Figure 1: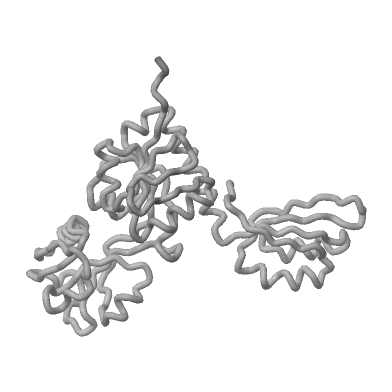
Figure 2: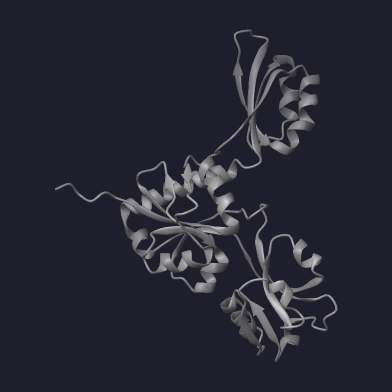
Length: 294
């Protein structure tokens, strides 16, 4: 009888984090195919078994052992009070590299100026646990009700304030709402169950996944740049490269020329290519990166 095959059960978030998470996995070398009729995506790694679930649920399922690991927000881990291991934090959100924020929000003309003004008031939110903890920390008694969605439209007619999630704050401003305070900032985290963390094979597999995902995230907004440079201009060329590390320099067959290669932020390439050209660089090639492993 053949021994049971090792499988790592990984939970991935659907909703707003689905596309950036799948793109990160793709850059890390994992091609995930999602069917509209299934919550079990396929992936080009026979050691992985994927589940596509609401980010709100992943921490709880990892805690209970239904999943070995998952990617979910720090906020939902706290909301569920999940007892799990955090292996890594990945600094990306739905549309930007900024953290999402849970914020206390009121109408622009509301008299509420601080959390203390919420005494005896009513608050709507999807993050009931986070909000109750926040109120307790500040010694405020208020009624917190669960919101099933469209939370922004509930003030001031239905509730006095809301606690909602935002990335840029633009939607809140468009609805004439004002942020009073920030309860928590959150990025996606790679988390493991206690049991999986103690399993040698699963832990090694998870650490490999984290390494590759970090490398893919590190490569975000960076490109490779290589060129041929006259030896006489090398010092000036290197000086104008905003490289994180010293560039790689190789001697060419022609003793008067060298090859220079480096990794830089994509946003500055358009600024320095004309400068490099003016210094005599030739054969300048810019190429995309999938992973940068420190």
